[in-house]
Image 1 (cartoon, rainbow, N blue to C red):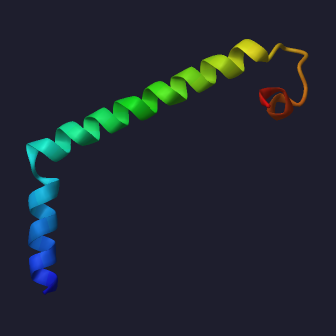
Image 2 (cartoon, one colour; image 1 turned 135 degrees about the vertical axis):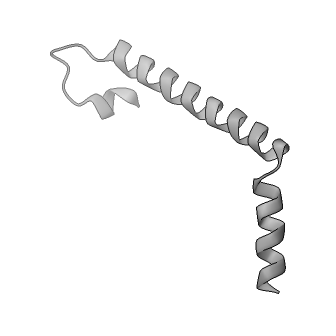
Length: 56
């Protein structure tokens, strides 16, 4: 049964649909990280202390 599982998993991971879906999720994650960094950067000044408290 494990061999069937491995074959099915390999089929899914090698498909074009999975690659497109993975790329979309990856790009969305990169965009979210970029936006978060920009918003933190706009709040923080060189003399700002307690950055994590200012986020909330």
